[in-house]
View 1 (cartoon, rainbow, N blue to C red):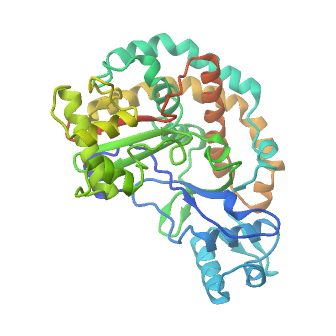
View 2 (view 1 turned 90 degrees about the horizontal axis):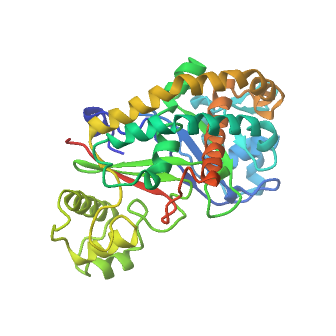
Length: 391
């Protein structure tokens, strides 16, 4: 991500989630089923690599061992293990106790433990769905005034609006401030939340959590929201393989991901302004395959500038007081679950516990809204939007 550009234009995204998939081996847990996720903004990034070695060290500690235990069971060099463990301690992600044992400062969320350790009560889901449904008339009225959305029926934007705007990307900073009133944990040289999550399979993201991916380009930005951003059908973020791109765009075309994203985003922007825009045939084919334009080259996704971004922020802010009040009513119950959880025993703060619980919460609410038909999951599985940084 181009943080310098984001600073100039004000980022479209309130936080960036980094996901790192990896492989290795462990006796108790299967490392290849785990992925790191982080919540950070701007230059706040981990100062250590979130790679296979870090993952394996974390899982060894999570299983009651020490980093040194990996020397006999894994492919890593003992010197690398010792150096990385020391770096994790310095970063504040691990704590070495006086007796030589280690504790984790962030949650490892397993499929076996998380449902009981971070439960989202059905009653809270029902109350949240009812709250959103009660606000639908005013949300729809505000939606009708959004520049860049007029060509997209509300149903087609429902995942973006009801989940990403009201609950996730446009909302989460306000929820952190209203509910937690605390800065993100200071680690290394920055402030960020981190979790290592176990996946149930290769398709859906860990625990079915919906997330926002935002890629800054030259003058434009592409947003992708869903819970199969990297495993669903190819999209403008993931793209097909280079051979497929060359077949679509021409064997002499620059098929590097950055170049293709820029060209596709520029073509989308041009078609939004004028469906008669003469675009390269291969780009049209790809945009249709991604479900971003129809057979008449009409753009099917929102295309908006900073004024609309701010209007979406206002929509989230208007909804926040009632959402925060609802969450506060359930905080005593949630704190009780935290105190009994393995995360508290490992030294994970309630603030970090809460923020990952909140991701589980809004994802389950989104699922419930989809089951009711209030949210429509796109045929492309995820929803895409185009930001125009100069408008």
